[in-house]
Image (cartoon, rainbow, N blue to C red):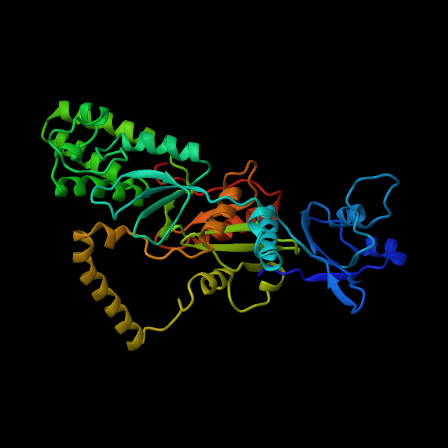
Length: 424
């Protein structure tokens, strides 16, 4: 937790010295109140709730709240009730928001979301418990064996992408209960041959499962599976001298590529949302690394380069120890047997996954903090301008790129950097 690691007692008689000791730097601060006597017969002591805020200048905020009030001013002033100030200097907006969230949750557990103005981000969901699943936009993430993809910057952007993306497939978009009634008239999508029309038994259950499986695989691979399949079919058609079909596949591939350009870099299958956010720290020559696994923010790692030069481990080794505990274990029989068991388990589960979409793609556990962390991540990623750098984990962590990102952040002003989209 990013705690409030500094503090000062406040006395009105020594206010000038107090303000001089408070740093004029960005951060968050907490004003703790004095206890007050209440009651008549039996005196009791009560303490008012503390005041928590984030600011671009801690000293200026303290002077505004604790300075001598002007006559007839309606501005909030806590000079007469404040006992001490606790604060934390932060080096970036992201660190400031995370520190404010963690401390707000500690001191105001019932209304910290209101203080942060946190709202769950928009996600795409495929409800795999339905016999005929459909893809739609939601802000709720549950461990209900559904497939979740995101987060998006807004509900509008999620809806726009889903509309264009689903045009590439023939899954249903209606919200009716499917009864497979041959007399049902269907909808406009079925009339335009853009849906397999399970509503009037236009397809079998197996055919619909195959189509929804293509949707899930395309989202899981951020479109790579779909583009590679079309590219292979186009090459095969060219080899067979079927140029008309090759031209049609080339046109469809262009359409798919255009649709995938609207997919934000941050959007991933929620279980595979693994990344690292790099920010400049408030400490000199220090980079803060914020790991994210499955959408959950973990405790940050502070790379103090002024001290690392005297350590026997390299920066890459320090990063590996934090992101991959146990990476340097020797090749003992215990480790080898563990890898064999893992491989056997994966092979045994493969058959089940191929038969059951929920077993392969369904989310079974959604931690209570997931919505909050995704909201913080979304707020930072889609902000303009965006400070710091983000690096995604694709099978392995990009340690060399992390080191180059650290060099860029230490060398000059913070700039917006993001990992390239897989389609680029």
